[in-house]
Image (cartoon, rainbow over all chains, first blue to last red; front, top):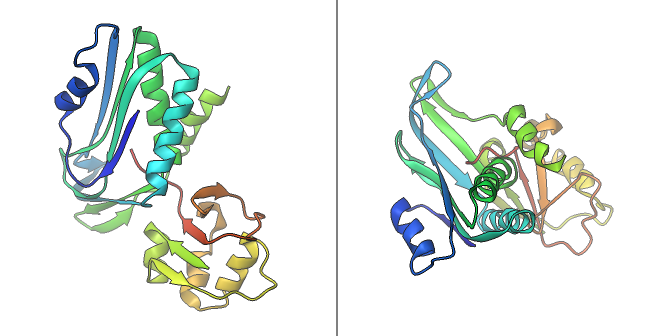
Length: 150
Length: 83
C-alpha cells in the first residue's frame, strides 16, 4: 500500500485511478476523506495546524496498513495524511482501499482510520476566535480503535 | 542522546529538539523524566500530568519503565489527534 505524509493537497480521483487503472479483478473501492470543519462544539474554527513526527508518522501508517492487510483480503490501497496549516474545507486525510468484495474494503478502511486517529503521531491545533488551542484526544476514539482487538 | 518534543510539550518546553549527555544512573524513561524535571520550571510544567504523556524510543512506542540502553532518540508528546 502507498503511504504518503505531505503538506500538499491530494486529488481523490487521481489516487483512485492510479490504483484501479488496468485492473479487472477489483470489485470494491472504498475511500474516506477527512476534511477540516469550521466548528468544534459551538466554537468557530478559523484555521487548523497539523503537526507530525517526521519518519515515525509514515512508519506508523505503514504498520497500520500491514495490520489491515493481515485481517482482510485487500488488493491495494493508499493512505495520505497532510500536515501544516489547513483551513475549513481543506482535505486532511485520505484512505482508499481495494478489495474483491465490499465488506472487506469497508471494514479495512474503517480499521485504518480508527487506528490512524489514535496511533499515528499527528496533533491538531485549532485557531478559534478566542485564540489557539491543542485538540484533546478523545476517549471515544480510543474505544473505537480498541473494539478491533475484541 | 537526542530528545524530541512535539505539540503541546514542544511549546511548553520551548524547543523541539535537544542533545543531552545523561548521568550514568539514568536507566529508564521514567528516570529520564525525573532528570528533565530538575532542568527548569518549563520541564516541570511539561511533565506535570503524566496521563497525557506518550513516549517513543527510536520511533517505537514504549512505557515509562522501558530501558534507554542503546537508544539514540527519545520523543515525548501528548496523545495523538490526527485523522
